[in-house]
Length: 324
Ligand code: CP
Image (tube, rainbow, N blue to C red; front, side, top):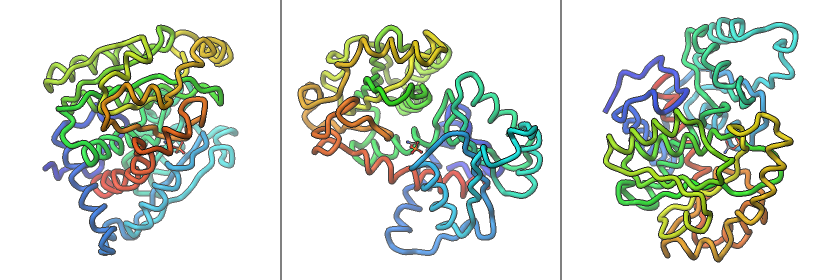
């Protein structure tokens, strides 16, 4: 167990060692147990987390806010449009000033080509830890919650085939941060990771290379499949969600047009039946119901989407308690 994590940023799990990530999972399970028993765990009494959102959220905002209250502290919600960012406050003012008022700064900034750079710049300017609540490249707390869910539901990831798959959606061009974070983290836990996606929906080459290296180092495997049904076959975990074709075009309207070629990439009852009979279905939510996934699958016996959403709370509390 690593106990020297005070002051650390969490921008991507790839920058934490395997030992440090094991500590997060261990503490998350302990905090989950303590909450279930009604045990006091006010580990961050009088501490404040500033949460700066440039994009909407249900789970992330609610789970960080609930988590800080349960740890005895407070979460301050800041909508970027209601700040002076539009009138000149740069990453420097945000890092310097919010870092002086608070014990941590959490940021969601998913704009393509901007989000990760902005969060890192704030982290450089801040004297307190910066937590990535999702950027254009990474969604580390989603991946940690998903890892915890897989361990709870299926056991040691080293025995498992996890299909991280593209699915069609028409609500908006979703960031690539979730699939990138999944392939990076699950390969470090020795899973057989299958990335299934159409040719236009590639992930960043450097992230794919890191996933391959992780798989080699941690004795798992990593493969890329371009056929939706093929990706489902025999999978223990089906993690199928939509993302935009940002690596093909930065024009979101063009990306939406490209995606229309793949309207049949929907996780339905026939597709889930191609996976292992005990397979679990995962999705970070929000999902485009009956477009990305049928009601029958997302509300059916394979689905673990609400366990995933719950585990956001526990892993985030663990990281906050360790770093703040
Ligand atoms: N999964 C997730 O991050 O959900 P929100 O966008 O609602 O925060």
